[in-house]
Amino acid sequence: MTDRFKRRVDLKNKRNVMALAWDAAGELLKSNNSIFVEVRSITRSDEQNAKLHAMLGDISKQKTFNGKKLNIEQWKMIFVSGHRIATGGEAEMAIGLEGEVINLRESTAKMSIKRLSSLIEYITAWGAENGVKFKDWKKYDTYSFN
Image (cartoon, helix red, strand yellow):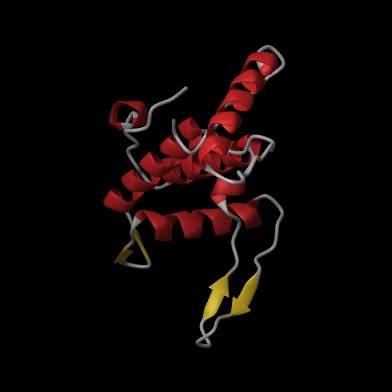
């Protein structure tokens, strides 16, 4: 038995999934004094995350920013920041522990499916305007989908 149980629940499968969750909780409690149970709304999907990172990988291989090659995480920071402004938000800056300027950006892990779709569309548009050739991300995907 694994120490983690995660399933997507909808109106059609809620009874079956909750029965499985009950069984998983019982198994975990056999070897633990307590466990943690979380019920939350769905944020981005695994498919969206895989596509986002594949696109950022394509950009990092093909483009520079201010004359410098950037890695996937750096491009992600740039696009999340730009997307926030493009969708009517404001940049939030702070002075860091060593006096550096920090952009306090959104977390892609906490984005809703709709918000991450908007970010992917933003990146797609930027890529089209800047000559990025995006691969068919599913061919190169290493994630397994449910």
